[in-house]
Length: 281
Picture 1 (spheres, rainbow, N blue to C red):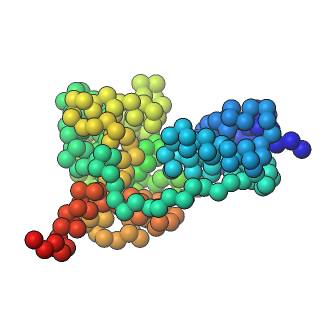
Picture 2 (tube, rainbow, N blue to C red; picture 1 turned 60 degrees about the horizontal axis):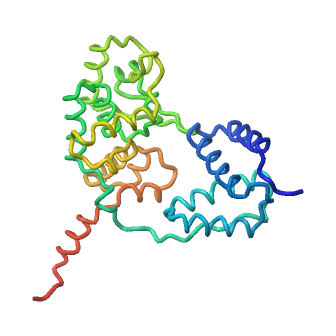
Picture 3 (spheres, rainbow, N blue to C red; picture 1 turned 90 degrees about the vertical axis):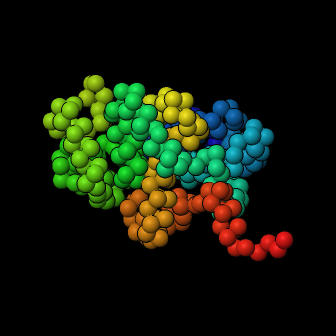
């Protein structure tokens, strides 16, 4: 059978992903990635040679290694579903960086400027969302778990891919959220909603965060919801030095994933090297 990626196959694959209860964001990413491959292959059957050419094409287009590997993972999982095992290709090898580039690290001071700016611009909901993400470490997709009842209890239950974990709402955050709830006359249900009563989605949050970058003086390349989760991880680890506990709080099934979150910045790396005091003048 010729291995041609058709719309019919993609519809079947989407159904399969939903039956596996994959997160909506994951489903959409896989479908986008497979569609990209389908556009590259066109009506030509997918072969091992085509996939190797596709990998080269992505490199020539200037994609980062991590992005290329992401496309390869999506393709390989689709091939596994289709039982097209002979066309799978390996990911590019990438040595793990020991530090975070300064241009992508959001600092605590910058985070506080974002919150202050959002409040000054009258974007109170955005300010509260930014604070909630940074004070709990939850994913932006998990904000819908933050309900009025949960805030009052001081704990929410987050369901991520069938794994349920408790997330503590600290006393200071609880007070701020209760004030927000009262001021906006939110009686029950999800705390952060649109005017139509639907939970705010990550796209709207991302756009709102970008809209205050210039006013707050923070490079917009650093400003996106997931960076707040990373900031939470770095601050927590700097105090506790307990990576296993941090992994549980973040809902990671692997400590290796957590390690990525707590990498130090190049600036801190330089300070650490300087403290070694091995240079003789």
